[in-house]
Amino acid sequence: MPSYTTLARRCALAVAATVAFAFPLTVGTSAVAGPKYDSSCACPKDGYVPGLGTPSTNKIFKDTNVNVFVGDDYETTASESEGLLVVLDDATISSSLFNVGTAGGGSLIVPENNAVMLAVGDELDIRSNLHIGLGFASQGITGGSAKVGGTISGRYDAGTGTVRQNLGSRATAQWKNFPKTITRESKKLSKRATNTRHELSYNRLTIPFTYKGSTSVVSIPASKINKARGLEIDFVGNARTADPIVINVQDDTNGKFSLDLTSFLNDGNVVDLRAEAFGNISSRVLWNLDSSFHDVTIGGAGKAGYQVPGSWLVPSYKADVSLNSSTNGRVWVNGDLTVHKQGNEQHSYPWIGEEPFDCVDKPKPEPKPEPTEPTEPSEPEPKPEPTEPSEPGEPTEPVQPEPTEPTDPSEPGEPTEPTDPSEPTEPSEPGESTDEPTEPGTDSGTLPTQEPQPTPTVEVLGETIEKNPEATDFPNAEGSKSDNELAQTGANPLFIALGAACLALIGIGGAFIARARRQS
Image (cartoon, rainbow, N blue to C red; front, side, top):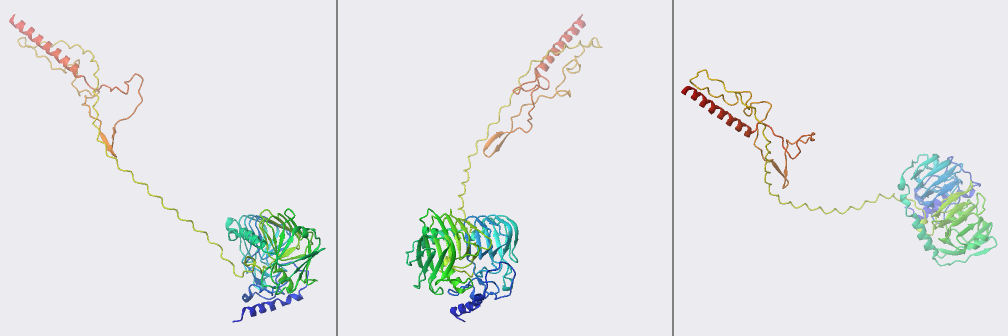
């Protein structure tokens, strides 16, 4: 098995053709035959980082790390954003044609085929045309994917990739802690002691490379850079073996910073964009701004096509960052990012100084939903103690109906004379005459008097309640008995007794009269 150094040299040979690359770069998405992706050199080896090229000249490397991160809103009128672009809030694309993930001309350090190349936490507004992962079909990349938390408006083409919208927080869940990473790393780097001297004379900033095997730290007040118009930066030394550099920009301008850069040099000579030195310098430099910077302009009044070397770290959540030139490295900001001018591009160059910024050739798995903590089972409510059943109530005493005064009975008729004068005529039995009261129950229009019965009771759950299934409530009619009085039905016993006594007296009287007649 070949050693890692041998593999790195093999990868370096694949990018040697960049020296013959002619600029200006052509922006487009047409596929051109060229070197294909080789998994043995997924990330470029330090010291063999390619300059800018096209699929026809450069080797394609794989990087799944974030190249451009925006903690708030993102807006662009530029041409391309190479590598993975993550926006936690809204993204607005107003370019005539905007490439994301892959670029017509760039480092060609890009996500793998059909991988996520664009993630937006909220709305994605495409006011022109958006291409995702296009242009590298002959090299094995046929498209890229996008995840959007809100809705997508406008036209896009993702090739064989997948575009999903309305994902909510899932769209950027993998990078929800990225702002904390930016803040932590920026604070850590800002505390590093300065160990490298710089020189700023007129419009040239000179920074020497070091070879100590540790990070070189340069500290520069923002006021010095803000005053330099049309600035050139000259990196002195061999970039291939040099230490990584952190340029800590100190805030002495009330949070305002502006870099008006026109070109960068190596040992006094303008760096060829196609040369390996361009890639090696870009992957070694990182600009770290104090957390108090809120108004940041990178490129100043730079023209489209001007190249700014190195990565950028802007930790302030209130920062409004404007890019007026092309950048070559990570661009990580916690605030808003606006990219101006058609022709400007963000090229993907990992920073070799610290692990969070480095090239990652294997994608991190998306976080699985965290299981919810099981709630403690609530204590079962104690069952109520059974109450002692109450003693069954005594049956209520029946209400005795108050008798009404009897009506006067009709006078009985005269007795019939006997046919035999010697024998007295027997008085007729009571009830034979229609004038006499009838026996109880013989008239269908009356009801017999019933003995009152106690109201039945039913015992339920230890409590005694009265129950009368035959009871029915009716409203009282005018002139009727009240609810506390019961209606009288049937014959009255007192009336019957008085009538019988009268009949007996009449019969006895008739017998005495008959007997007196016989004696006479």
